[in-house]
Image (cartoon, rainbow, N blue to C red; front, side):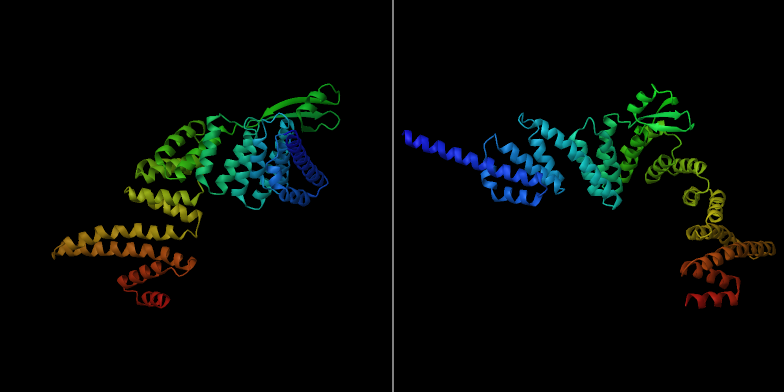
Length: 407
């Protein structure tokens, strides 16, 4: 019995010795920069190391995590390090390695952004945030921004809501001092700020806080709800955001777009007018305001907006077409009046007057359509409309020219 026990102990000793030997071998290769060789050792002796005792296994998992980190398998590295955070034998090393991992993640995310790989950047920045949520809130903010650029709007909304919940502002205190000899003010670190105050070479010490990012976060929540089609939540969020940013053009437009989706055109018109006051040379805003104003029956006002749109952007094709359609709407009333007249002398006189009014409407449209045809490319609707106008006016040459152009 004693011989069996002794034999078992020898086997256990040899097994443990083998575990430590192979792990040390892999660690030395890694430290020497031979990451591939270290990885190969861990793979060859995976069964032994996976079943190692608690004195050896944490070191094995830690090395496995560092190899994953080196290979930019950041999620795998994170998972391994987090599993070891509470192990007292290796805790300090893990904490330090997580700091390095956080830095690697952020640097890699910066590269991803430069290469327009915004989804990858989002994932890495969020992982960097998770490493230390208290200290790395800035990374959550940047992850949200990258998620917007990646057009993964549900993810972006989730991150912005987290930031709002924690009252994140992103405010940073900056420190400045003026060198007496040169008179130049320079931004310095907090340590330099404290040190330079003891020096006679500097003066004009001041601190300055950056602007809070909280209003932007609330605004983006509203924009994202709107983007995702949740008008009720978007409206609640946008109204909250406008309390702190009443003149923000994007917020005004977001609220306006929500109202147009709800078919509340009067409120949309009010907000678009407010937006144009912020950006009076924006042809798109004027065009959209013209469309809704026309729908609400304010034809003269709508016409003025279309004309101003064209003045700002002479190549705004839809503005030309809509302006012509708006002018031609006046024809319907004239035709109805003409059809209601009798054959008396006075009615005939009225008829001729109405006929002239109708022709004047057509003539008013001609230069608008000709301009559109000149600036456009294959403007079939404009050509057909002008051809019909020429036909009605009896302008044979104009009609033939448009017909040839159409063919």
